[in-house]
Length: 355
Image (cartoon, rainbow, N blue to C red; front, side, top):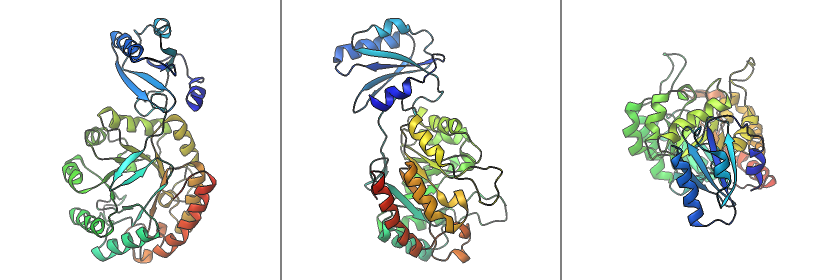
């Protein structure tokens, strides 16, 4: 049981949630008996079958569950209280790493790192197609591009909207790579479900709970960016909002948080990657472009993210950063991206991963 039991040793015995850890050799009858006993206490039971163990998680108020009785059931190895408020996203309920299908044969969360690349904003057909083709040739597996852009100033470029999504679809047609783009409003969800492969929820909408519930009812994978000043627990609770509605296909994205430092656009919190990988089974990708806001930092921060255990990267690439309509200062060129990929592959090999 390894890492799972190690982390369970630190659980507080307070709280209203509970998990049952089944013995390595249990019968189907013993499993059903344990489930029935938990359901009698008024909770729903989540069954998580990992490579080494099976866990029964109580979803709901487990205050009425008899811990001593449950621990004595045949087939049950131990019973533990869970103090964290997030359940579906919790590694204690789901000990194995989740692997999320991004569409078109691309996954994130396994041994192979998923590198997502493209411009901050879609600006024209020539631009998005050229960048998509270039990053694919260099090894990217998915493309990013903003069609709707949440900007601090109402006078800044807000994106091309529907036309931007259409151009992303054109680039997908020519490259075969899945699209990752940001959803701003629940009203746009049916359109995104029809046209987009991975729906991004941006940092400013991380706690837009109505939007989270809506995408939670979608079957599309959701890339959830960490909020500007959000704690790790708040970030995971936002993932919980999505998963509680039935959509388990959540990808977390660390994109830097706001601190007192002003030299960089944000402060890249690589410790969060380690923390989330310990707390949750969900894959984590890192956005070094938004985190630093400086193109010259992207290479080293991307390599550091891989070393820290990130499952993927989302990197801004633009064919003419100086004239970009949005965030040119943090965008690297296709040539720089091409030079970066072999370095990432070398670092990945050192930590048992591959590009």
